Length: 284
Image 1: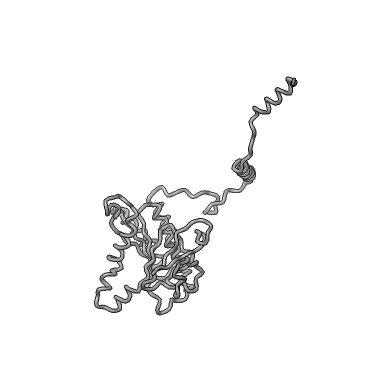
Image 2: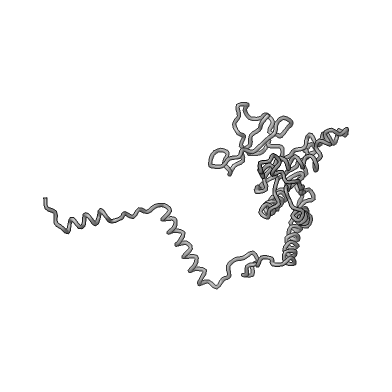
């Protein structure tokens, strides 16, 4: 069967022509390009300075000298002091008489990033009025880092609350010879229990009041990259936390008690215990 040459060329051309398939990421790139293009031309023609934290149309330059850094710290401390006065003028209801001592602890290194995380942690603990003491356990600091951190804590963090503390521990990274930095968390907490809280000393003392206070204290261990959205206490009776399913069934008393510690289920995703929800489990 004879086929015209022109038709044959068309068929060959169609067969060799690459097909263009639009994928979702292509559409997303086009959409983002359009949005940025519109914003560029809109703000280019507007005689309005970009919004900044100073409100003057100029971006504040980072401190370049020790004097500028000291001035920035003083300004920050004054702002925190004003916030603290606002809280003092509107005191919250005091906890009941049988409310046990609370210690909210978090373990850190002395890096700049964890210094900022710690400051945010303290700020939100102040904002939600976290009861009891809040303690940063800093491990492995150099003498200079410890001096700088202590000065910043005394000049700034302690103004939020006198119950905010920092406790320094040795570096436990090589405690077992395998260079594992996360040893600082359990061993740092133990160091704090022994040298700051003096738990063993109080338990073994002949003072019944000290022993009872130490044994009934509530110790919470968190991480520095967390932020409290509301007070965290030992009592979950009226809380909306999700209780993880257990063969033993739900706890009869939704409180942290002797022989009944509580912990958070570490989970991500969109299930019942996702990062957007609170999900706790209890053990005995």
